[in-house]
Image (cartoon, rainbow, N blue to C red):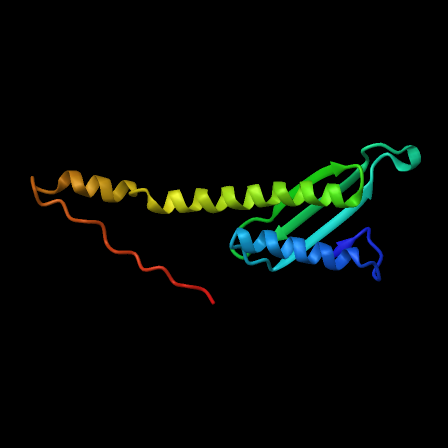
Length: 129
């Protein structure tokens, strides 16, 4: 859903393409996304266009990023860059947590007789379509 842009505006297709590219680079499947544009200062001018992007992914909390820009396109680019950074950081965080040995595995290794330490069980990942 895109708020703050007219329904017939060709900028909407540009927003959809850019958001799809960011989600594709981060390998994130979005169930819902909201892009909102607001004019912060009103008619006074200046750097006053705020773009807020919220993306919901299955099994994870919603990711949110916002940025200010002189016009809608600059604000969108900055917000999508921040969103991509957040999505990649979350993916890397989950990846490193999955690779660490868990405390029960490490404790069991200490109880094994000398030289009989077992290898960790092989984890098979399900591939999504």
